[in-house]
Length: 285
Image 1 (cartoon, rainbow, N blue to C red):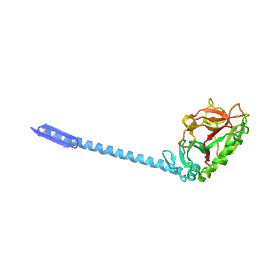
Image 2: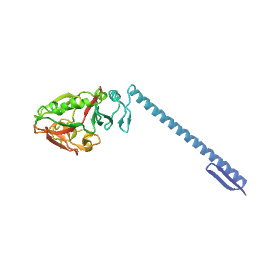
Image 3: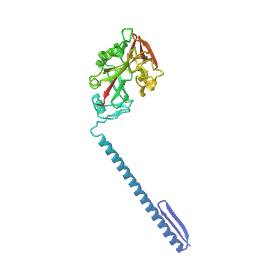
Image 4: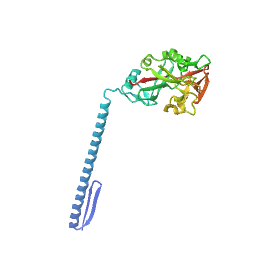
């Protein structure tokens, strides 16, 4: 009786028997090894081909994407922070680069107050930025005990443009676009005005059940549905504070709308002092 022991890779044959049995099993074993090797070669070839097909698909998609974006500057962001200059950011906006709510850029005023400007809305027409916290000092919504003339003729709007705008960095001031804003006066008339800096309206910040002014004038922005985004510090890194809105209080000629420190709606005498954020848009065309 003969004995045969053969190993090929992970395959092993052990057999005892006559010479004819040994020969038959040897041939069968090697035929099996050959078939396994051929199957492995075929599987590897198919895998390589699938990889090539996948790479070709990716290259084709990337080529199509590059063709769409040809001539469009990208925008560099690191964990949501926009890294370009304001000129580069504005150029990217006008060229169709993608911006997302929550993107932000840090900076400081000419007198050294730090700020973070956050993308709060992206439409077909513009990208909207707002300061995460308030800027500047406190200001009266109106020095007179009335909201006559609405936000357009208010002291706080005058202060935004004559005091706060001039404290923004020059490269930022150069790219801010004029915004057409709607407001409702204390007689219920809806009017429009143009401005570079503005305050959010009550109906943009709160839903209809919480809105103390201009109900239905705008829809609540997605950004402000999170109450934490309605809470602003008195300055960057400072405790939260109340801040003015652009809206007059419903049914009153002496109250203006206001966001208190915990992000809830309230109205307050227009002669009171409070703080303001910076809000502006950069148009896409």
